View 1 (cartoon, rainbow, N blue to C red):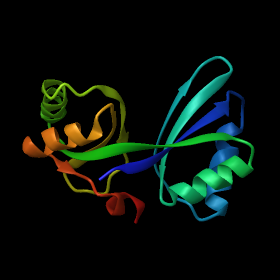
View 2: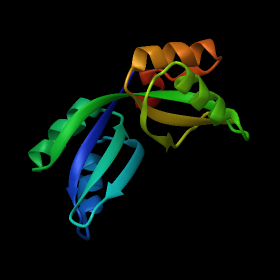
View 3: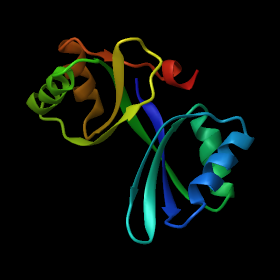
Length: 142
């Protein structure tokens, strides 16, 4: 139930995002979600894409440093307090939540949250027990 995520080290300069997204688009790779954290010289771009292994190879060929990591995605009802329930389940299971961001979703009345957990198996079990739906990779890649 894990999703492959690309973590790309990017130079903090004008046009970098255009170059990366054009490179992916030229290969028919669709971006499902992205998050960018920057510093003065470099940033870390996290991407969920339709063809993660191909995307990693294409970006490496373009001279970028790319790491493929595993994250999970959960569906959360789009109403106040629902994500806090998921966060509490994770905390009570003694699982570390390293970072998270939202996924542009086509699912009615649900928000999709991408999470990096230090113990994904335990986190998934706790979330399922608490009634949360874990998104399958096919739901994201297709």
